[in-house]
Amino acid sequence: VYNLDPLKHPEAKRFDHLTYLDAINRRLEVMDSTALSLCMDNNLPIVVFDLQAPNSIERAVMGEPIGTQVSN
Image 1 (cartoon, rainbow, N blue to C red):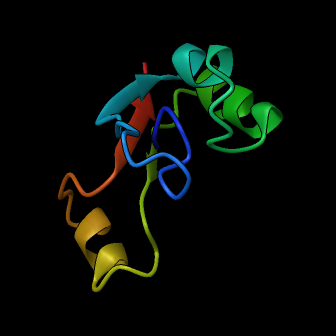
Image 2: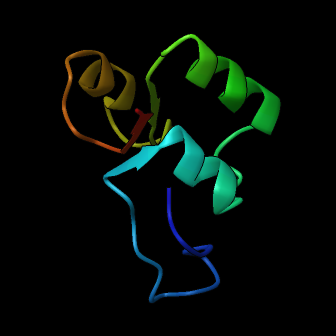
């Protein structure tokens, strides 16, 4: 998750971690706000990562810090 669209803004900064409220308040379009609220209400952490990167799903499942974690 970036503060700006990295394809349009080379100066965009990637977040390593965000709280649910940060993601909602910054309107970062991580995911649908209703789905994000449901995850927050049920304390379900979210990992946002590039599915097209090599071995990304395996790396995420193994707990590697490959993307942005959204949680409390």
